[in-house]
Length: 303
Image (cartoon, rainbow, N blue to C red; front, top):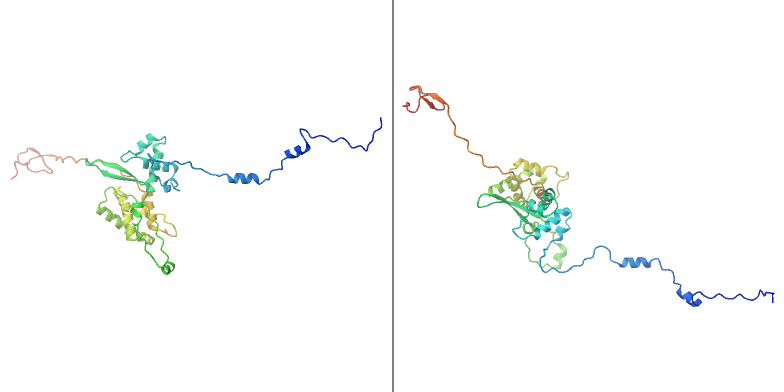
């Protein structure tokens, strides 16, 4: 009984927690490396909108303002706030500074941005009492009413004409320019003459009659603010591109709006000088004292 038979096979081990078939069934194949990428790519990325249609108390704002490439974030937000205000509401710097945490300096800079890009206009008006006030005008589409040509009815063309003569591309509208508070005919004529003289300073600034009519109110706004014509001409013609502007009228319109100086300070009318007081003289006849610009006889002794 103490001898061992090495030819007897050893006893098979049993599977832990079940049969061997159950152990094979619980083993999962390794996950494919690209499965996680497909699940990640299927998920949307970026912003998602949860929009609800407004029925009351809303304002329509154009994407040309909210996505403007040159305006600052403060200027865009301030323009949206001003467009949402009712007519007659105050939109001066002090009122806006009291409404928002930004100071008067930043709000004033944002208002200048909106005025330069045509979203805001400031016009000075005289009240019936004779006082000059500044009226703020908000524009939701700058230059749309002034520069865009009126819509025309589409005309039918033959197929041969459409292929031989493709339609011309409409030129882009000129930027908006400031307007004077009192557009007097003499002031506008002086502004048009100044624009016509620009070609003598630089031949590349030759303007058409349409461009001159569009730019004349902007030059008149400068002249109305006590700016000398020589200074206006210098501001429009200095530092031009070496190869010349591609659209001279567009460049002049941008400079008229972006470089517009502030209005002159209010100056009360000068008081009338006091009447002249002549020195005293002794009359040559009666030796009485009298006032006159030169010596001689008094009024009673004159013949």
